Image (cartoon, rainbow, N blue to C red; front, top):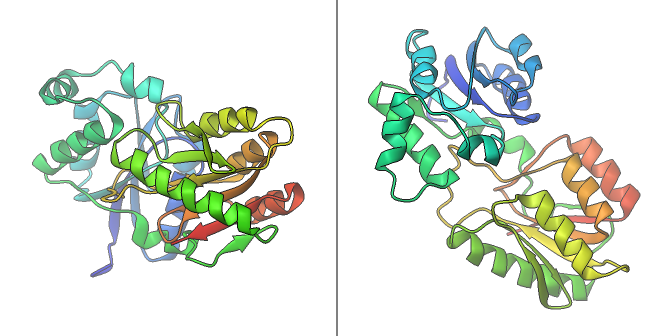
Length: 273
């Protein structure tokens, strides 16, 4: 970060990432945190970690921007997931409807990019949260669980290559491979469902390798690739033996629990450059 930031807004989706960020930002000197939270999505615990919180429904774009501007927020971050069905089944207000009508393609990337543009018009910059989260983004050489075999290395290399290609095409960011064959490619259903499907197609003995990447020109302002305990539980249930993440570009949440699960289920978690 170029200079310390004292006041910051958080657009908070679901799961634990907004909570982790709030704690980490506080530890790194952010004195005033203001959150915009979504009913049915955001963990209510976030309210205890910020100075102020505004609860909205998904799609209330004008209220979201106003929540920041009336509180003097000029920089914000976007963290956590918004359930895809809620993102696309939202009941937009007039400002959101006008924004959506201007979009030729309506996917998570274009919608969030348009939201960043709307925020900017009212003087609020959407910035990357990664400077506060580097501690949780493993670098190359990171390994938890059993050492990776030569065959697994080959599958990981292939899975990473295919994952980068599908992410370039805006399809998804995760792939499951076994013995040089692509078993599953992530699309709208998300990483966990892709892992489940790949595990089923690997057969009763399992042993597939999965890879999760960031896009080539990934916009970390509103999407940081993440894995956590749920990802490891899904891999275990699908009998996936290796999970490869992109070094320096993927968050590992609740790291101690992830490490315990990887060792318990003998899953190799590796960071690949």
